Image 1 (cartoon, rainbow, N blue to C red):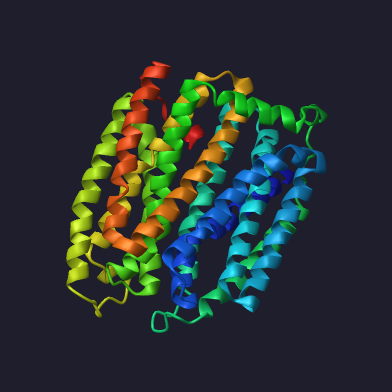
Image 2 (cartoon, rainbow, N blue to C red):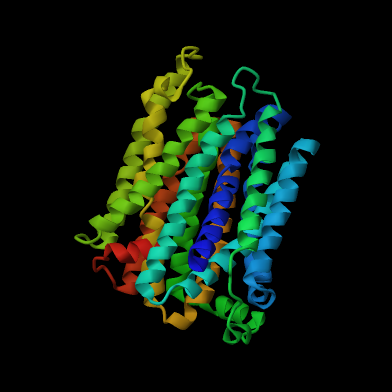
Length: 423
């Protein structure tokens, strides 16, 4: 029972933060409508979220074991609950920026704590991978739930209404309940052995890694991948609304296909990679990603040129392009976990922690850059050109993968467990 209570508490934390973190695309769309701001300004929310995660992960992550995982998680949850409750009261864009900065800060504490607690609850590699994948699976369930939760508070007939912000009262309540679950769970303190390594040593080790050509190519691959994923994922609700003329609530609901596609893609990849080497597989994925984009965007252009479609009232009425475009998630899904797996398995275990730090930093930078660039192009040249722009980082990933493969010299097949652990 104590073990179950701990697992329930950390899973609940991941579920609520999945909703909060992945609501950024929905909130950008609603902020544009409700506060009459430009797309580049709205895209700053991605930076407030991602950069706070990266900064806090390294600024105070080493202190989390010292103050205790339970206390760190409680502090993160109370912070988010308080800001969620205040957001509808102030109801302006600056408050939403503060909200996402707090969400990013809190998630950094949650992630460090959860990963450490999973290690405490696991006796071997197999049980660790199993539990971590269960937690990550619950995270994806939270992502999917978040789109539908937010859409329930959106009035498609009044796009400028602020009623959608009432969802944060509910999220504040859910976060308080999660904090109570953490409070009453028997989470252990970190072993004394984990408290001996100074923060500065971890930071120096991370900097040293960047001098390795293999690591440099790897972080560029991570950067370009997240640039594509966040650029598409963040702006897909706006694309559905402005280009495909879907109502606000339907635009958000149908974006959930993108999250589901990523989850399905990673599950399928684990099976395919039993029989195919990773380099060939990822190049096939990139080629079909480009083909799918080149097929879907002209279809979206035809819908846009046809004018407003007033008959759409649910996801079942949406045009074919609205369903096909999110399916790019199936093809892009394996890239991130596979290259992480290749990289980490190429390093000695002592370097895994600083390497994970670099992954967090460059993922954050790629996500922020992708969102901002897509927002600027979307504002200036339209949604089609903004999404066509993703073909450039796809080509760059193909180049970095070639260099990466040549540096590692590893093109052997992975087992599904390798991919599941990396995902």
